[in-house]
Amino acid sequence: MSSSARLVRPAVQPGAGEESDDTLRDIPLPPYVTGEDAQFAVRAVVVHAPRRWSGGTICRNDASPHPCRLHRWGRRVLTLRGLPPAAIDALIEQGDPAAAPPPHRPGA
Image (cartoon, rainbow, N blue to C red; front, side, top):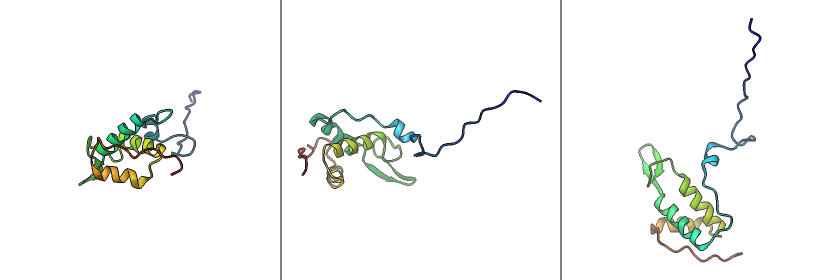
């Protein structure tokens, strides 16, 4: 018999102490959100909008599963900027990547 032992690492479910693969691949948020960041975020959510496909919903720009990294980043930035989900959805529906996000109004 061999005296060497194999170490087996226990499987950890996402959310049970380790981050999921999607979280590890997310684009970092800026330390504070500027108007320029918000404009980039509008472009990200509009260009990387969902598209129905035979296999499900994909990113319109790069055909990865929706929401893709840039769409998630854009939504997070716009949320930090104070936009509610309905306002973000309206920007996506408008479909203009150069649209100006509503002005930031804290507490509004």
